[in-house]
Image: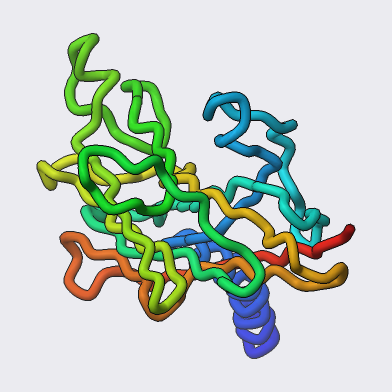
Length: 221
């Protein structure tokens, strides 16, 4: 009997070692960044570039414009997340945000792209309803601001109706940066999610924990 109990507890321990990391990762709000070779200002703002992903520690050149996706993965639990607050931190001595065109007296801000179209068959943004028109709409909205004092492009992402939570993964928004012409070869570009600013709120009191993952790029002439 003692031998059986010993084997039983050893088996439980082995299962915990294997299963626990998956449960932890599945019950967190995961924020990360991804970079792509894309310049939205080229060809009269129609854009140009390969749109190829730039891997972590990949190379960029002085003067190059690239896209950074703010990527999010919802926790795989029953928690209903209704509001996300997060931000992309950057070094203003190395890169500068691309500015949106000045319109209607509104002060220029960082150029941001967000595709809010959706369907009833998956995707990051849940559909507003079941009709053909509603399946291409969502109650979610993205607001942003370039906080120049802290060098963070801040985002508030929320469900206006508070009834259709995010349960999938995908890009919350895209921002664009230009490598400064004066940056020396070998300079490191650190792009990361501001962990202190980032949080998620929902129906569950206190919410679930979060993880934030950044990336580095290298300047090569």
